[in-house]
Length: 163
Image 1 (cartoon, rainbow, N blue to C red):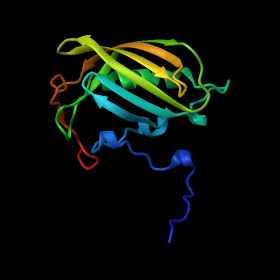
Image 2 (cartoon, one colour):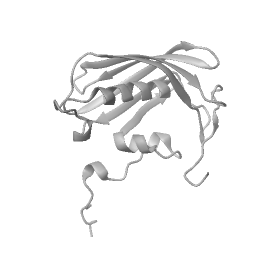
Image 3 (cartoon, one colour):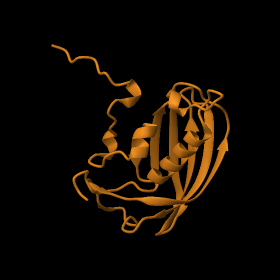
Image 4 (cartoon, rainbow, N blue to C red):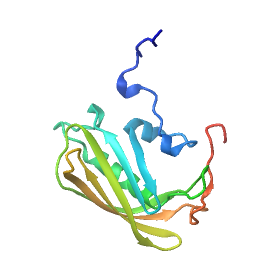
């Protein structure tokens, strides 16, 4: 016996990001629906399937969506955690964006690479590509580690059950 078809619109289906388990996706990540697809020290990759909600009035991906991908992948590039079940966090101090071309459909891939920094601050270069490998946007970000996140071991991640 097969499961009955979902009554939810595909954009409203439950959303998880397996690479962040046990941490739940944030409300913003659920709304945007980007996924972390690669994560290692000093590098991260996000993917986002372009949905109607991501388009502006001209029917191209809104610049705010591209800036979100640049900002988010930059933060992940600097916060890989070496201890399973722990996490690291950062806040954005500065983000410079340049929009290179337009995207209207398909999947966007954002790549962030940590370029340098010190104990509290790090810098990242980010790029967003469409599914034809065309460069859509670039960014440079400066981030500050949240307390306890300066060390690669991070801090214990809170589950949905932990206040």
